[in-house]
Each structure stands twice: as structure tokens, then as C-alpha cells.
Image 1 (cartoon, rainbow over the protein chains, first blue to last red):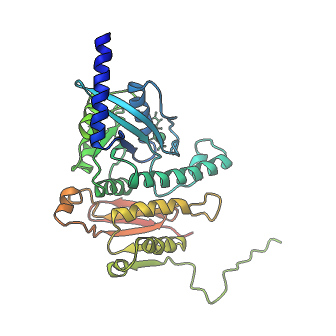
Image 2 (cartoon, each protein chain N blue to C red; image 1 turned 45 degrees about the vertical axis):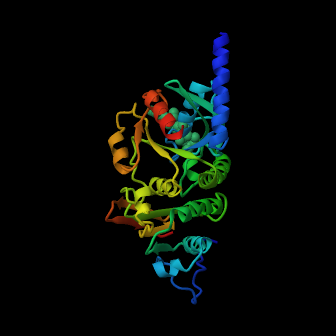
Image 3 (cartoon, rainbow over the protein chains, first blue to last red; image 1 turned 180 degrees about the horizontal axis):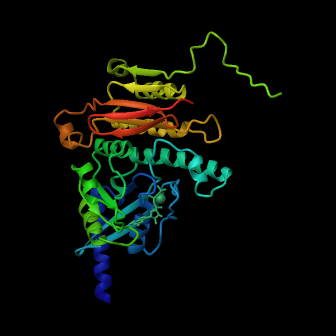
Length: 215
Length: 137
Ligand SMILES: Nc1nc2c(ncn2[C@@H]2O[C@H](COP(=O)(O)OP(=O)(O)OP(=O)(O)O)[C@@H](O)[C@H]2O)c(=O)[nH]1
Ligand SMILES: [Mg+2]
């Protein structure tokens, strides 16, 4: 017990000193990707696994997340070491928002218009964060969908131009139509990690890679 | 009062039936600052034109174009719902990454098509061909 406290203390001291030398704050890792890819589901899983509480609501309706949300000081333990990151769940990026798309989800016009307005603000905010406020990116894709879209190409290009470390997550591998190969073919210059954020499949590799890339 | 009146019969205006395509040369774009480029593109798109860039935008400019586009969508207003944008080559071939830039390959040099989201639809796209459908209002 006492030893445990001592080790904890020692590790928090060494963490404090190491962060002194690496420039302080934990790295901010932005979770980016198109709407509905499973970004919030992933952010919630990471937060629940390591802090016990969630980040925000998940939904099959696109643009559920309309404001970047941060979960601070998520300490991920891997092989005796630990990495502390701030997880930023961002609104799905798109070049267009039409309020009519929400009417199909049984949302009234007034709400649909408001949701669209918030969604556009959210996307603008996400782009701003990406240019200024993140230290690394997890790019989440729905592996059942074609990864070769203009938004994906542009976003990955923007991330590359800033030399941010990036991991591509091929999500929803619990679904039959998922193709991890298609995702890794679309972005051969980056590492692709398959997972199901919903089912929790392959999370060990997910955390290994997060520690390796963002530690 | 069952009479239908058409008011677009004002002579001086160009015919509204057609679709205007603005092809902007790399030279023209080179002389502009980021916001000027974005304005040129978005003004064209707001006028319901199709804008074709000989040479694509830099990643930073694309990022600002997306941001600017979002702020100009007014769901309750003029019906602008954003842009559709396609370019090739796709840029995900590995050359545009860190190594590519290290070797001085910074110019995206990609043909880029941009139009109003509600009027342009990509039918097919690969590294050598973009096929788009443009609809009239
Ligand atoms: N089958 C399956 N469904 C998933 C998985 N991850 C997320 N989903 C579902 O996909 C839908 C979208 O999930 P979200 O986490 O809200 O997606 P998002 O990327 O945050 O979406 P926006 O906030 O709108 O950009 C929800 O219905 C989730 O339950 C997965 O691994 N497998
Ligand atoms: Mg979300």
C-alpha cells in the first residue's frame, strides 16, 4: 500500500519533470473524420476505459457532435509506461450542410435548421482547431464506406502539411461490409488500425498505437 | 388570377438557361492572397457557376475554404448549402506527405472543380478522371 503510494508519487514526479522538459501540457489529440464515422463512440470508449466517464452523445444522425469537446488528462497505461493525452472529439467535417437531410430523421424543420447552423459552426471550429490547437490526429473512417473521398483526401493533406503525427482508424469492423484493406490502400503512407469502437474490438492495438504515436 | 408571370424577361441579362463555367489559370491564382482566392471561388459558386482551377489549392487554403464555406451557409436564407469539390490526382498516393515535401514536391498542381453543392454531383472519380453531373436550378 505504502509502496504503491510511493511509486505513484515517484511516477507523478517524473511525469511532472518530463513534461517540464517536453513543454508542459499533455498532448492534445484531435479525433477527426467525416460525419458518422464513430468519432464520439471512440472518444467515449477511450474516456470510459481510462477515466470512467464519457465525452458526449453518439447518434446515427449525422452532425450529432457540433462543438469540439475535450476530455483532459486521459492517462493511458501501456507496458509499465503511461502516456497522458487530452482527447478532443470534433464535429464531422464536410463541405456542405443541407437542413433537409435532417428531415429524413424525423426532425422538425425548425430543429433541422438550428441543427444545420450549429453543424456549420462546428465544422468551422474543427478546421480552426486543426490549424492551431492539436498536436496529433486520429483520423476515423467508417470502413464500410468508400475512403477515397475529397474530404478525406483534403483533411489528410491538411494534417500532413502540418507534420502532425496521424493514425488512420478503420472503424466498424464488426460489420460484414467493412474493408480495412480499402482504407489502408487509400492512405498507404500512414498506419491503419482496424477497430470497432462500438464493440470494443482490437482496443489493445488501438492503445498500443496511441502510446507509440502520441506518447 | 391563374396567370403565370415570368419576370426574367429583362433583355439585357445573359440567358439564364445555361451554366457558366469559370476556368481560372494557375497564373491568375498565383498572384492572389489566400482570402482573395477563396473569395474568387465562393463568389463564383454563389452565382451558381462552376469554378475550375488549373492548379489546386494548398492544404492551408483548402482548410480555410472549408471554414469560410461553413460560415456562409445560411440554412434559412438564400439556399446556399455549401460546395462540392473534386480534384485529381487524389493526393493520397504518398508523394504529398513529408517525404514528398522534403523532395520539393510541394505544389499540389491538381485540377480542381468546385460548384454549388445542390447543383453538382460527382458520378465517378479516380486518379485520371472526374465525371460530374451539373443540374440546372
Ligand atoms: N456497427 C458499428 N457502429 C458504430 C461503431 N462506431 C460507431 N458506430 C455507430 O455509428 C453511428 C455514429 O457514431 P458517432 O460516434 O456518433 O459518430 P461521429 O463520428 O461522432 O459522428 P458526428 O458527431 O456526427 O460527426 C452511431 O449510430 C454509432 O453507434 C462501430 O464500431 N460499429
Ligand atoms: Mg460525434
